[in-house]
Length: 410
Image (cartoon, rainbow, N blue to C red; front, side, top):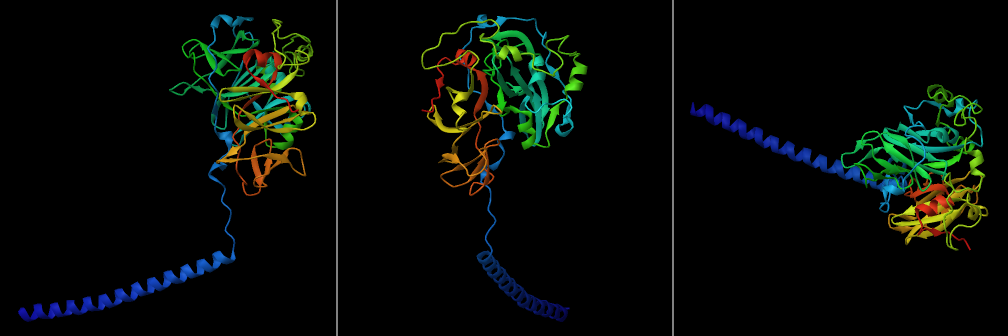
């Protein structure tokens, strides 16, 4: 028995000795292999340039709503009643058609509100919005409200998620006006909301602010040229659902013309026709002069359309913050962005090609004005952060923002 134990122990010892030898051999082979791989990688890295990596800020801004600045405190008594609630019917569950199939009801020079969220691209014709003023929609998985006030010529797109609980709201037209501009109401809490302030004026949600999604006010031809995959609000189906009739029998119907077309050419300041005092540094010209209104933090500034007749863009500052302002006078498309990108302040100048492409002096990257995206150069794939911008009649803008600056390109 002892002899058997001795023989077994001797066999185990021999096996362990061989095992150690094999372990050292495997370890040595692994080390040599790793060194070889590292040498090959080093040589390949030296001979082939690395692929450029987009900066962390390259996530598209279209996916991120921006919270509007807080409004001043508003006395609910200044909200004026003009029509009964829902006499102008907001659109719910809108129906769309591919833009390429809309030639029979869309006109090239027709104005639209265009937006893209999470790759979902849509256009909302102004003649339809003039008849309904609000479209409750879901775009790119986001609950939004597309809003248009023809009295002040203001177009804004909001997230319908509001409040600490992120409740989803649906909006209707209250029939009331604040400084000649659309006042909405939400059907869930019955609160009143100012379109231009983007905040609740009265009711259970008073003081709550909405987030906005960047959008562009432009012509149908300009929009579909840049966005061939766009959907467009179906005029025919919307007319059928809301019994729009035709323009001759229903001044708000038909969707073939904007029912406010004649109003735009009249000198009256809104339907209540209040003459608003202005100081010498503010508006010039007739009451319906159009401006691009910009808000950054607590500051506001009006950019008259006339300033863009000789050039389409300006490097400017608002509230001490560098911004880029761009407007195509032919299509009335206007946008604004922050010029700071990851700590780098950019200065833009014209490119040798289209006036819709700008170049920054700091890196030589080219930027597409419509999207705020760098399309070439070291900053390829980066996006500028948008700021709140809307078209507006000057009387409406200064009534809301009496301390607003006025841009002068001289």
